[in-house]
Image 1 (tube, rainbow, N blue to C red):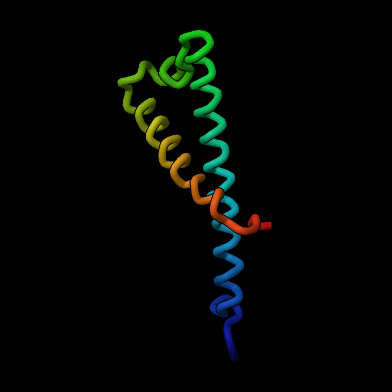
Image 2: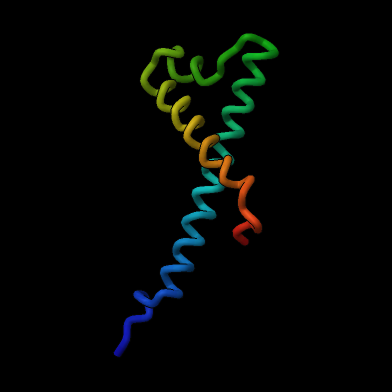
Length: 85
C-alpha cells in the first residue's frame, strides 16, 4: 500500500501552494510599505512608527525589516515566465 501524501506530485502541489501564500504575504507587506512611504512623502507621517511606538521601537523595526525582505523576494516576480495559478 503506497501513501499518496509522499508522492512527488503531492510535494509539487504543496510547493506551489506555499509559493502562492508567500507571494501574497510579500505583496501585502509591500502594500503596507508603499502606503507608509506615501504617507511619509505626502504628510511626513510614519504610520508604522505611530502604531508601534516610534521608529526605534522593536516592533516597528521588525515591520520595516519584513517589508524590506518582502521587497527583495518580489524582485523574483520580474523573472518568472508565468504566474503561479
